[in-house]
Image 1: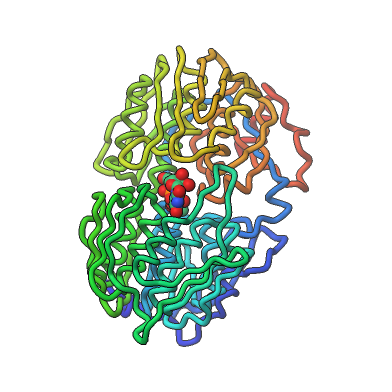
Image 2: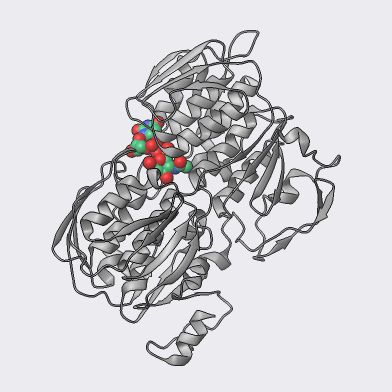
Length: 499
Ligand code: UD1
């Protein structure tokens, strides 16, 4: 249904009322605004996107060894939500995006859009974006450097305005993560691009201000470069062909969103994308796909705790490499219905080798969670991280929990141990944080995890969802006396965790 049928209020709140750029000390903000003719009172209990000292000093305490049961609801895909928010910049009307996960990264992307002058309204998991007016082509340094995906908006801004100034996202904990493929692709489409003082300045010469269709070959099937260039090409003059395009489901989701706005894109999900540029895109109402990495993380939670529970909604086709590897390890997963999976209690966990690859290969985002699982599997496993150059830092933290993992270059040698034992650990990046949570669920005794800002970037209330499945997991805020009631094997302690 085009969003034109859901008129926005005449007077929208100012953008940064919804996504305040300034950090707030409180974990709860409440706003009252008019939405679709009704007054609603949204409230959000997520930490502010600019990670506050409170979030940084919060810890998760996990009492391991408890089986999980019941059902868990999987949220919308983080990597779709972020790039689809950027894609809404292509449209000069209203876009309604549904199934948006509640994440610090999503808030941060909202702040980037707000800073560009775009209007946003959030109502539960629905996000309304109106980019009819983009007031500036300059994205703010403080925000872009905190969120790599915000750089993916440069193609859309350039396509709309003919000019864009985007700070380079910089490296991060998992590797250097350059943007050369993004830049070369935009240049191939006629943009003049200069990088000065850490800012990528791009403009389209000529009267029309429109990019030109081009043939682009990506040296690496980069997800972000494919998405950025695909967005830029939707409004370019003529045909763009992207060879060696990324095939990830989130790339397909973005293509479907753009198609819903009137873009002409063929080949999404294959390594050749053909985009026929159009002068304008129109409003749409779009629902993003379930998060396959969140689903995979819960499947590993089931395997590592030897539990039986179900999860939905999922797209089983998106989980093929993850389910295949779990089956190799000895875990049985059945399809209860087309969008619902059930993991069954595993008797024996067996070693397996993993190599991360672009989709449909095994996802790099699942490498850390699987390392936790393989650390208690029988036998020796070999994990090769071939997508990012520095994504094995969780190995040493898992060793604190009693795992036996040696790292050489991009390869981890995992010798399965019968048991992990709880300890204090530190999350170094998003998926490392998830891996430590999973290991903590399996470990004997208490595990305390620091560095939760990483977890909150990309998991929609992972601790709460695990609690609902029966995990003994508790987020301890700085003002709460840490640890007082949290004595391993104490009944009182377990009660305080399960509430
Ligand atoms: C996206 C995902 C991330 C996932 C990754 C790989 C988002 C917001 N993030 O990140 O969760 O782990 O895909 O599936 O969608 N590269 C270059 N030059 C470039 C671009 C990339 O050399 O211009 C390299 C990277 O350094 C990396 C590899 O290509 O080694 C793959 O990275 P890429 O697919 O671009 O990852 P992202 O899009 O950043």
